Amino acid sequence: MLSSTADHLYWMARHFERAENTARMLDVTHRMMLLPDSKTEPDLAWAAPWAVPLVTTGLASAFYELYPEPSTRNVLEFLVTRSDNPSSISGSLQSARENARSVRGAITSEMWECINATWLEFKNIDPDQLEPGKIGDLFDRVKLRSHLFRGVTVGTSLHDESYHFIRLGTFLERADNTARILDVKYHILLPSVQDVGGAQDYYQWGALLRSVSAFEAYRKIYRDVIQPPKVAELLILRMDMPRSLHACMDEIHNILKLLPPSAQGAEVRRKAGELHARLHYGRIEDIIASGLHEYLTDFVEQIGLLGQDVNRSFFSHDA
Image (cartoon, rainbow, N blue to C red; front, top):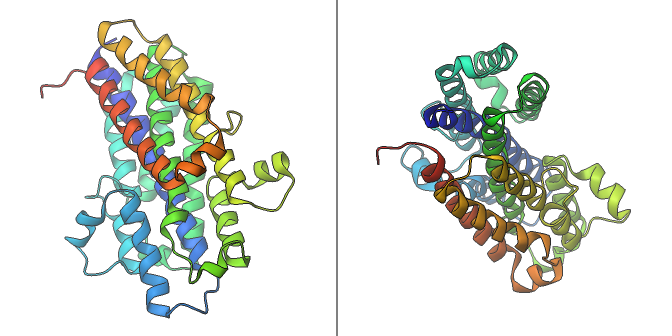
């Protein structure tokens, strides 16, 4: 298959997954903002947490070039509606559609209709939908559309090389974003040390679990009150949790084995295998002892480098 076609399929999937994960990251911030915080000044309670998605996505500098402060409205506009921001929900869906249009003959008609309909629905988002009482529904619609696209892809695509590159893009993007979403909790500072383990801390972890559709899974597996180490274990090491880092690396590791062998591809598979082994044999006690934030930051860096290696190994670029 042509490397340019593989490139478009890979990035089509990454951008669609990015739209969903941006919605998830904003959703967890939004849910945490709904929690009462009587010990913090109102202005700081709203400004500081909404800066978190900008920091975790690496978009803070781009944001401050356009906006004076990370208010609720400014951050939502930047990360939801601005089509000139390639990492916003609107921008990601537009990029997914453009990549799909470039390889229209390599995807099924159902996939194209799903992508096109999603882009049409979200290309001109009504500003009223950014209001606190409505934004949650918008995030849910983005996630639902992403679920629909994945289901259509699995149910209508021939499971050949094209399908493998689509899945590779999906899980690379998901692994990166799960690590970032989990790290969001460690950027939102509690008003006092005494609140750690308290009611606010409990509901923040619950909000995080719900944002990655993992609340019911946590209850089923641990049958216990929400405890941070167990949340971290669920989202990092559990191979049966669909959005965990381990599950994503399982998929990436297996997909790379199915792609055409090459000298460059062998090195990508080696690096993916090394990252997979760290998760497969890792222990949450060791991760927490060494620092969860540091572990997640390193993982984001490593998955980014792996993505760059995939680009160099399988896709043609002039640079």
